[in-house]
Image (cartoon, rainbow, N blue to C red):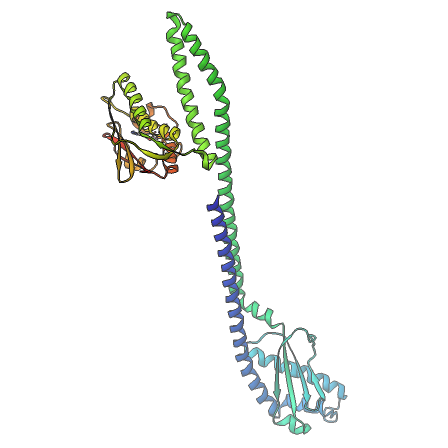
Amino acid sequence: MRGKKVYIVIFIISIIGLAIVQYQYLRIGLNLAKIQFNQKIGLAIHEIKNDLAQPNQLTFLVGKAITKDSIYFNLAADSIQEASRYFMNDFLKDKLLQHGIKTAFTYNLYAKDSTDYLRSPKSYGDKNDLLKYTLTLDGYLPTLVKKRLILELRFQNLNSYFLSQLNGLTIPSLLFILAIIIVIFWVLKSFYWQQHLITTTNEFINNLTHELKTPVFSIGIASKILLEKATQENKELVGMIRNQVTKLNSQIEKVLDLASLESKKGFINKKIVDFKPVILTIIKEFEQIAALENINFIGEAKGNSYMLMCDSYHLENAINSLLENAKKYAKEHSHIEFLAVKENKKLTIRVKDNGIGISAADKKKIFDKFFRVSSGDVHNVKGYGLGLNYVKRIVKLHKGKITVLSSLGKGSEFIISLPLLS
Ligand code: ADP
Protein backbone atom coordinates (compact mmCIF):
# COMPACT_ATOMS: atom_id res chain seq x y z
CA MET A 1 0.00 0.00 0.00
CA ARG A 2 2.80 2.40 0.95
CA GLY A 3 4.69 1.47 -2.21
CA LYS A 4 1.72 2.54 -4.35
CA LYS A 5 1.50 5.90 -2.60
CA VAL A 6 5.22 6.48 -3.21
CA TYR A 7 4.72 5.86 -6.95
CA ILE A 8 1.79 8.28 -7.08
CA VAL A 9 3.75 10.96 -5.21
CA ILE A 10 6.74 10.49 -7.55
CA PHE A 11 4.40 10.72 -10.54
CA ILE A 12 2.75 13.93 -9.29
CA ILE A 13 6.11 15.51 -8.44
CA SER A 14 7.48 14.56 -11.89
CA ILE A 15 4.48 16.05 -13.69
CA ILE A 16 4.70 19.25 -11.64
CA GLY A 17 8.46 19.33 -12.31
CA LEU A 18 7.87 18.85 -16.02
CA ALA A 19 5.26 21.61 -16.04
CA ILE A 20 7.67 23.98 -14.24
CA VAL A 21 10.45 23.16 -16.69
CA GLN A 22 8.07 23.78 -19.59
CA TYR A 23 6.98 27.07 -18.03
CA GLN A 24 10.61 28.16 -17.64
CA TYR A 25 11.31 27.22 -21.27
CA LEU A 26 8.28 29.25 -22.27
CA ARG A 27 9.54 32.26 -20.33
CA ILE A 28 12.98 31.94 -21.91
CA GLY A 29 11.28 31.59 -25.30
CA LEU A 30 9.22 34.72 -24.66
CA ASN A 31 12.28 36.68 -23.63
CA LEU A 32 14.14 35.55 -26.72
CA ALA A 33 11.15 36.51 -28.86
CA LYS A 34 11.17 39.96 -27.20
CA ILE A 35 14.89 40.39 -27.86
CA GLN A 36 14.38 39.36 -31.46
CA PHE A 37 11.47 41.77 -31.75
CA ASN A 38 13.60 44.60 -30.36
CA GLN A 39 16.32 43.91 -32.89
CA LYS A 40 13.84 43.94 -35.76
CA ILE A 41 12.17 47.10 -34.53
CA GLY A 42 15.55 48.80 -34.13
CA LEU A 43 16.29 48.24 -37.82
CA ALA A 44 12.79 49.26 -38.92
CA ILE A 45 12.91 52.47 -36.85
CA HIS A 46 16.24 53.37 -38.38
CA GLU A 47 14.81 53.12 -41.88
CA ILE A 48 11.58 54.92 -40.92
CA LYS A 49 13.62 57.79 -39.47
CA ASN A 50 15.78 58.01 -42.60
CA ASP A 51 12.80 58.01 -44.97
CA LEU A 52 10.89 60.61 -42.98
CA ALA A 53 13.96 62.88 -42.92
CA GLN A 54 13.91 63.14 -46.74
CA PRO A 55 11.54 65.25 -48.80
CA ASN A 56 9.39 62.69 -50.63
CA GLN A 57 5.75 62.13 -51.52
CA LEU A 58 4.85 61.04 -48.01
CA THR A 59 6.70 63.74 -46.11
CA PHE A 60 5.40 66.35 -48.57
CA LEU A 61 1.78 65.26 -47.94
CA VAL A 62 2.31 65.02 -44.18
CA GLY A 63 3.98 68.43 -44.29
CA LYS A 64 0.93 69.92 -45.96
CA ALA A 65 -1.32 68.22 -43.41
CA ILE A 66 0.51 69.45 -40.34
CA THR A 67 0.91 72.98 -41.66
CA LYS A 68 -2.76 72.85 -42.71
CA ASP A 69 -1.75 74.10 -46.17
CA SER A 70 -4.67 73.29 -48.42
CA ILE A 71 -3.66 75.48 -51.33
CA TYR A 72 -1.29 73.11 -53.09
CA PHE A 73 -3.71 70.17 -53.32
CA ASN A 74 -6.78 72.36 -53.59
CA LEU A 75 -8.54 70.25 -51.00
CA ALA A 76 -10.03 70.85 -47.58
CA ALA A 77 -7.44 70.72 -44.79
CA ASP A 78 -9.40 67.88 -43.14
CA SER A 79 -9.20 65.73 -46.25
CA ILE A 80 -5.45 66.21 -46.53
CA GLN A 81 -5.15 65.31 -42.85
CA GLU A 82 -7.23 62.18 -43.37
CA ALA A 83 -5.24 61.13 -46.43
CA SER A 84 -1.91 61.57 -44.73
CA ARG A 85 -3.05 59.53 -41.74
CA TYR A 86 -3.64 56.58 -44.05
CA PHE A 87 -0.49 57.12 -46.09
CA MET A 88 1.61 57.30 -42.95
CA ASN A 89 -0.09 54.18 -41.61
CA ASP A 90 0.59 52.25 -44.82
CA PHE A 91 4.18 53.44 -44.91
CA LEU A 92 4.84 52.32 -41.33
CA LYS A 93 3.04 49.02 -41.85
CA ASP A 94 5.13 48.36 -44.93
CA LYS A 95 8.40 49.16 -43.21
CA LEU A 96 7.55 46.95 -40.23
CA LEU A 97 6.46 44.10 -42.49
CA GLN A 98 9.75 44.35 -44.39
CA HIS A 99 11.44 43.54 -41.07
CA GLY A 100 9.10 40.70 -40.26
CA ILE A 101 6.90 42.55 -37.75
CA LYS A 102 3.27 41.67 -38.30
CA THR A 103 1.77 42.73 -34.99
CA ALA A 104 -0.86 45.50 -34.79
CA PHE A 105 0.34 48.99 -33.94
CA THR A 106 -0.80 52.57 -33.55
CA TYR A 107 1.17 55.76 -34.13
CA ASN A 108 1.04 59.34 -33.06
CA LEU A 109 2.94 62.30 -34.50
CA TYR A 110 3.24 65.22 -32.14
CA ALA A 111 5.44 68.16 -31.32
CA LYS A 112 7.38 68.68 -28.11
CA ASP A 113 4.87 71.38 -27.12
CA SER A 114 2.11 68.73 -27.14
CA THR A 115 0.52 69.72 -30.43
CA ASP A 116 -1.03 66.59 -31.83
CA TYR A 117 -0.49 66.42 -35.58
CA LEU A 118 -1.35 62.98 -36.81
CA ARG A 119 -2.84 59.81 -35.34
CA SER A 120 -3.22 56.33 -36.74
CA PRO A 121 -6.68 55.53 -38.14
CA LYS A 122 -7.12 52.71 -35.63
CA SER A 123 -6.97 53.00 -31.88
CA TYR A 124 -6.82 50.05 -29.47
CA GLY A 125 -7.12 51.95 -26.22
CA ASP A 126 -4.28 52.24 -23.72
CA LYS A 127 -4.88 48.95 -21.97
CA ASN A 128 -3.38 46.72 -24.62
CA ASP A 129 -0.24 48.77 -25.01
CA LEU A 130 2.81 46.83 -24.15
CA LEU A 131 5.70 48.40 -25.91
CA LYS A 132 6.16 52.04 -26.86
CA TYR A 133 8.90 53.41 -29.12
CA THR A 134 9.46 57.13 -29.62
CA LEU A 135 11.51 58.52 -32.53
CA THR A 136 12.63 62.13 -32.73
CA LEU A 137 12.36 63.08 -36.38
CA ASP A 138 15.13 64.90 -38.23
CA GLY A 139 15.32 66.69 -41.53
CA TYR A 140 12.45 67.77 -43.67
CA LEU A 141 9.39 67.78 -41.36
CA PRO A 142 10.89 69.40 -38.19
CA THR A 143 12.49 72.07 -40.38
CA LEU A 144 9.11 72.72 -41.98
CA VAL A 145 7.23 73.32 -38.73
CA LYS A 146 10.27 74.58 -36.86
CA LYS A 147 9.48 72.33 -33.92
CA ARG A 148 10.88 69.13 -32.51
CA LEU A 149 8.65 66.39 -33.92
CA ILE A 150 8.18 63.04 -32.28
CA LEU A 151 6.69 59.88 -33.83
CA GLU A 152 5.46 57.42 -31.27
CA LEU A 153 4.81 53.77 -32.15
CA ARG A 154 2.77 51.56 -29.86
CA PHE A 155 2.50 47.83 -30.31
CA GLN A 156 -0.59 45.95 -29.26
CA ASN A 157 -1.09 42.53 -27.64
CA LEU A 158 2.57 41.63 -27.87
CA ASN A 159 2.37 38.70 -25.46
CA SER A 160 -0.20 36.86 -27.53
CA TYR A 161 1.85 37.74 -30.61
CA PHE A 162 4.98 36.20 -29.05
CA LEU A 163 3.02 33.19 -27.86
CA SER A 164 1.66 32.65 -31.33
CA GLN A 165 5.25 32.62 -32.57
CA LEU A 166 6.13 29.99 -29.95
CA ASN A 167 3.12 27.83 -30.73
CA GLY A 168 5.33 25.33 -32.49
CA LEU A 169 6.84 24.58 -29.07
CA THR A 170 4.11 25.16 -26.52
CA ILE A 171 1.28 23.21 -28.09
CA PRO A 172 3.29 20.00 -28.73
CA SER A 173 4.83 20.08 -25.24
CA LEU A 174 1.40 20.57 -23.64
CA LEU A 175 0.05 17.73 -25.75
CA PHE A 176 2.92 15.45 -24.73
CA ILE A 177 2.43 16.24 -21.03
CA LEU A 178 -1.26 15.52 -21.45
CA ALA A 179 -0.48 12.23 -23.20
CA ILE A 180 1.88 11.21 -20.35
CA ILE A 181 -0.79 12.06 -17.76
CA ILE A 182 -3.46 10.08 -19.63
CA VAL A 183 -1.21 7.02 -20.06
CA ILE A 184 -0.08 7.04 -16.41
CA PHE A 185 -3.66 7.42 -15.20
CA TRP A 186 -4.66 4.52 -17.38
CA VAL A 187 -1.79 2.39 -16.03
CA LEU A 188 -2.65 3.31 -12.42
CA LYS A 189 -6.31 2.62 -13.04
CA SER A 190 -5.67 -0.85 -14.44
CA PHE A 191 -3.16 -1.48 -11.65
CA TYR A 192 -5.77 -0.64 -9.00
CA TRP A 193 -8.38 -2.59 -10.86
CA GLN A 194 -6.09 -5.62 -10.84
CA GLN A 195 -5.35 -5.15 -7.15
CA HIS A 196 -9.06 -4.98 -6.51
CA LEU A 197 -9.59 -8.15 -8.51
CA ILE A 198 -6.87 -9.97 -6.56
CA THR A 199 -8.35 -8.83 -3.24
CA THR A 200 -11.87 -9.86 -4.19
CA THR A 201 -10.65 -13.21 -5.52
CA ASN A 202 -8.75 -13.81 -2.27
CA GLU A 203 -11.77 -12.82 -0.23
CA PHE A 204 -13.94 -15.15 -2.25
CA ILE A 205 -11.53 -18.08 -1.79
CA ASN A 206 -11.28 -17.37 1.94
CA ASN A 207 -15.04 -17.18 2.39
CA LEU A 208 -15.53 -20.33 0.41
CA THR A 209 -12.95 -22.28 2.42
CA HIS A 210 -14.50 -21.00 5.66
CA GLU A 211 -17.87 -22.21 4.48
CA LEU A 212 -16.37 -25.61 3.63
CA LYS A 213 -14.79 -25.99 7.04
CA THR A 214 -17.95 -26.77 8.98
CA PRO A 215 -19.34 -29.51 6.67
CA VAL A 216 -15.89 -31.07 6.35
CA PHE A 217 -15.56 -31.06 10.14
CA SER A 218 -18.99 -32.70 10.49
CA ILE A 219 -18.19 -35.35 7.88
CA GLY A 220 -14.91 -35.98 9.69
CA ILE A 221 -16.67 -36.57 13.03
CA ALA A 222 -19.41 -38.65 11.43
CA SER A 223 -16.93 -40.80 9.52
CA LYS A 224 -14.89 -41.32 12.69
CA ILE A 225 -17.97 -42.58 14.54
CA LEU A 226 -18.97 -44.69 11.55
CA LEU A 227 -15.47 -46.19 11.33
CA GLU A 228 -15.70 -47.32 14.92
CA LYS A 229 -19.03 -49.02 14.24
CA ALA A 230 -18.23 -50.23 10.73
CA THR A 231 -18.64 -53.83 9.80
CA GLN A 232 -15.85 -55.66 8.04
CA GLU A 233 -17.74 -55.17 4.79
CA ASN A 234 -17.92 -51.39 4.71
CA LYS A 235 -14.83 -50.62 6.80
CA GLU A 236 -12.78 -49.99 3.66
CA LEU A 237 -15.32 -47.58 2.23
CA VAL A 238 -15.67 -45.59 5.45
CA GLY A 239 -11.90 -45.60 5.80
CA MET A 240 -11.66 -44.07 2.35
CA ILE A 241 -14.15 -41.34 3.28
CA ARG A 242 -12.15 -40.61 6.42
CA ASN A 243 -8.84 -40.40 4.51
CA GLN A 244 -10.25 -38.08 1.90
CA VAL A 245 -11.84 -35.86 4.54
CA THR A 246 -8.52 -35.60 6.35
CA LYS A 247 -6.83 -34.60 3.10
CA LEU A 248 -9.53 -32.07 2.30
CA ASN A 249 -9.25 -30.66 5.78
CA SER A 250 -5.51 -30.17 5.50
CA GLN A 251 -5.94 -28.38 2.14
CA ILE A 252 -8.55 -26.08 3.67
CA GLU A 253 -6.21 -25.36 6.57
CA LYS A 254 -3.44 -24.46 4.12
CA VAL A 255 -5.60 -21.99 2.23
CA LEU A 256 -6.83 -20.43 5.46
CA ASP A 257 -3.32 -20.19 6.92
CA LEU A 258 -2.11 -18.39 3.82
CA ALA A 259 -5.16 -16.14 3.75
CA SER A 260 -4.72 -15.11 7.37
CA LEU A 261 -1.06 -14.34 6.68
CA GLU A 262 -2.07 -12.08 3.82
CA SER A 263 -4.93 -10.30 5.51
CA LYS A 264 -3.19 -9.28 8.74
CA LYS A 265 0.46 -8.34 8.81
CA GLY A 266 1.12 -9.11 12.43
CA PHE A 267 -0.86 -12.31 12.34
CA ILE A 268 1.92 -14.59 13.44
CA ASN A 269 2.36 -14.81 17.15
CA LYS A 270 6.07 -14.90 17.95
CA LYS A 271 7.42 -16.09 21.27
CA ILE A 272 10.82 -17.11 22.55
CA VAL A 273 10.83 -20.88 22.04
CA ASP A 274 13.29 -23.73 22.12
CA PHE A 275 12.47 -25.12 18.71
CA LYS A 276 14.52 -28.31 19.10
CA PRO A 277 11.66 -30.38 20.60
CA VAL A 278 9.42 -29.29 17.71
CA ILE A 279 12.06 -30.40 15.20
CA LEU A 280 12.40 -33.73 16.99
CA THR A 281 8.63 -34.24 16.76
CA ILE A 282 8.68 -33.40 13.05
CA ILE A 283 11.44 -35.97 12.51
CA LYS A 284 9.65 -38.61 14.58
CA GLU A 285 6.35 -38.14 12.78
CA PHE A 286 7.97 -38.24 9.37
CA GLU A 287 9.89 -41.38 10.31
CA GLN A 288 6.52 -43.07 10.86
CA ILE A 289 5.17 -41.87 7.51
CA ALA A 290 8.40 -42.93 5.77
CA ALA A 291 8.19 -46.39 7.30
CA LEU A 292 4.61 -46.75 6.07
CA GLU A 293 5.34 -45.50 2.57
CA ASN A 294 8.62 -47.21 2.00
CA ILE A 295 10.75 -44.08 2.00
CA ASN A 296 14.35 -44.16 3.02
CA PHE A 297 14.46 -41.30 5.51
CA ILE A 298 17.30 -39.93 7.62
CA GLY A 299 16.45 -37.19 10.11
CA GLU A 300 19.01 -35.51 12.31
CA ALA A 301 18.94 -32.52 14.67
CA LYS A 302 22.40 -31.36 15.83
CA GLY A 303 23.10 -29.16 18.84
CA ASN A 304 21.31 -28.86 22.18
CA SER A 305 18.72 -26.18 21.91
CA TYR A 306 17.42 -23.92 19.14
CA MET A 307 16.32 -20.69 20.77
CA LEU A 308 14.16 -18.83 18.29
CA MET A 309 11.76 -15.92 18.34
CA CYS A 310 9.07 -17.70 16.42
CA ASP A 311 5.54 -18.85 15.89
CA SER A 312 5.98 -22.61 16.39
CA TYR A 313 2.70 -23.52 14.75
CA HIS A 314 3.45 -21.81 11.43
CA LEU A 315 7.13 -22.73 11.39
CA GLU A 316 6.27 -26.37 12.00
CA ASN A 317 3.70 -26.23 9.18
CA ALA A 318 6.28 -24.71 6.85
CA ILE A 319 8.89 -27.41 7.55
CA ASN A 320 6.27 -30.12 7.18
CA SER A 321 5.30 -28.66 3.79
CA LEU A 322 8.90 -29.10 2.61
CA LEU A 323 8.94 -32.71 3.79
CA GLU A 324 5.57 -33.31 2.19
CA ASN A 325 6.87 -31.96 -1.14
CA ALA A 326 9.98 -34.15 -0.89
CA LYS A 327 7.61 -37.11 -0.56
CA LYS A 328 5.19 -35.88 -3.26
CA TYR A 329 7.77 -35.16 -5.92
CA ALA A 330 9.77 -38.34 -5.47
CA LYS A 331 10.79 -41.02 -7.95
CA GLU A 332 11.17 -44.70 -7.22
CA HIS A 333 13.46 -45.55 -4.28
CA SER A 334 12.76 -42.30 -2.57
CA HIS A 335 15.49 -41.12 -0.25
CA ILE A 336 14.89 -38.06 1.92
CA GLU A 337 17.33 -36.40 4.30
CA PHE A 338 16.43 -33.91 6.99
CA LEU A 339 19.09 -32.00 8.86
CA ALA A 340 18.85 -29.23 11.46
CA VAL A 341 22.12 -27.61 12.49
CA LYS A 342 23.37 -24.47 14.21
CA GLU A 343 25.75 -22.42 12.03
CA ASN A 344 26.99 -18.86 12.69
CA LYS A 345 24.14 -17.88 15.03
CA LYS A 346 21.69 -19.33 12.58
CA LEU A 347 19.56 -22.43 12.56
CA THR A 348 19.89 -24.15 9.19
CA ILE A 349 17.27 -26.67 8.17
CA ARG A 350 17.91 -28.77 5.10
CA VAL A 351 15.37 -30.98 3.37
CA LYS A 352 16.97 -33.02 0.61
CA ASP A 353 15.39 -35.51 -1.75
CA ASN A 354 16.41 -37.59 -4.76
CA GLY A 355 13.15 -36.84 -6.54
CA ILE A 356 12.21 -35.41 -9.91
CA GLY A 357 14.06 -32.11 -9.34
CA ILE A 358 13.21 -28.65 -10.67
CA SER A 359 14.50 -26.98 -13.84
CA ALA A 360 16.48 -23.74 -13.55
CA ALA A 361 13.64 -21.76 -15.17
CA ASP A 362 10.99 -23.14 -12.79
CA LYS A 363 13.22 -22.63 -9.75
CA LYS A 364 12.57 -18.89 -9.99
CA LYS A 365 8.81 -19.36 -9.93
CA ILE A 366 8.12 -22.15 -7.45
CA PHE A 367 7.66 -19.69 -4.57
CA ASP A 368 4.97 -17.76 -6.48
CA LYS A 369 1.40 -18.22 -5.34
CA PHE A 370 -0.51 -20.84 -7.41
CA PHE A 371 2.58 -21.79 -9.42
CA ARG A 372 2.95 -25.47 -10.25
CA VAL A 373 5.44 -27.05 -12.61
CA SER A 374 3.24 -28.11 -15.46
CA SER A 375 5.14 -30.80 -17.27
CA GLY A 376 5.84 -34.49 -17.26
CA ASP A 377 5.13 -36.54 -14.19
CA VAL A 378 4.23 -33.58 -12.03
CA HIS A 379 0.72 -33.67 -13.45
CA ASN A 380 0.05 -36.80 -11.48
CA VAL A 381 0.61 -35.04 -8.19
CA LYS A 382 -2.26 -33.05 -6.75
CA GLY A 383 -1.68 -29.60 -5.34
CA TYR A 384 -2.61 -25.93 -5.55
CA GLY A 385 0.78 -24.28 -5.72
CA LEU A 386 0.30 -22.73 -2.30
CA GLY A 387 2.75 -24.70 -0.15
CA LEU A 388 6.03 -23.06 -1.07
CA ASN A 389 4.47 -19.62 -1.15
CA TYR A 390 3.33 -20.19 2.43
CA VAL A 391 6.78 -21.49 3.43
CA LYS A 392 8.50 -18.44 1.96
CA ARG A 393 6.12 -16.03 3.70
CA ILE A 394 6.62 -17.74 7.05
CA VAL A 395 10.40 -17.78 6.68
CA LYS A 396 10.35 -14.09 5.76
CA LEU A 397 8.17 -13.24 8.77
CA HIS A 398 10.88 -14.88 10.88
CA LYS A 399 13.58 -12.76 9.20
CA GLY A 400 15.02 -15.89 7.66
CA LYS A 401 16.00 -17.03 4.17
CA ILE A 402 15.01 -19.93 1.97
CA THR A 403 17.08 -21.21 -0.92
CA VAL A 404 16.76 -24.15 -3.24
CA LEU A 405 19.38 -26.26 -4.93
CA SER A 406 17.98 -28.55 -7.55
CA SER A 407 18.66 -30.18 -10.86
CA LEU A 408 16.05 -31.77 -13.01
CA GLY A 409 15.85 -35.55 -12.61
CA LYS A 410 18.39 -35.66 -9.77
CA GLY A 411 16.61 -34.18 -6.77
CA SER A 412 16.19 -31.01 -4.76
CA GLU A 413 17.42 -29.50 -1.54
CA PHE A 414 15.51 -26.75 0.26
CA ILE A 415 17.52 -24.81 2.83
CA ILE A 416 15.95 -22.57 5.45
CA SER A 417 18.12 -20.42 7.66
CA LEU A 418 16.67 -18.63 10.69
CA PRO A 419 18.35 -16.22 13.11
CA LEU A 420 19.02 -17.83 16.50
CA LEU A 421 18.66 -15.86 19.71
CA SER A 422 21.66 -17.60 21.29
P1 ADP B 1 2.01 -27.84 -4.78
O1 ADP B 1 2.91 -28.89 -4.23
O2 ADP B 1 0.69 -27.78 -4.14
O3 ADP B 1 1.93 -27.88 -6.27
P2 ADP B 1 4.04 -26.00 -3.83
O4 ADP B 1 4.00 -24.53 -3.69
O5 ADP B 1 4.35 -26.79 -2.62
O6 ADP B 1 2.67 -26.40 -4.46
O7 ADP B 1 5.10 -26.33 -4.93
C1 ADP B 1 5.12 -25.64 -6.15
C2 ADP B 1 5.76 -26.48 -7.25
O8 ADP B 1 7.15 -26.62 -6.98
C3 ADP B 1 5.22 -27.86 -7.34
O9 ADP B 1 4.11 -27.91 -8.21
C4 ADP B 1 6.38 -28.68 -7.87
O10 ADP B 1 6.38 -28.66 -9.26
C5 ADP B 1 7.60 -27.92 -7.38
N1 ADP B 1 8.24 -28.57 -6.23
C6 ADP B 1 8.09 -28.27 -4.94
N2 ADP B 1 8.86 -29.05 -4.14
C7 ADP B 1 9.50 -29.88 -4.97
C8 ADP B 1 10.45 -30.95 -4.77
N3 ADP B 1 10.89 -31.31 -3.57
N4 ADP B 1 10.91 -31.59 -5.87
C9 ADP B 1 10.51 -31.24 -7.10
N5 ADP B 1 9.61 -30.26 -7.35
C10 ADP B 1 9.12 -29.60 -6.30
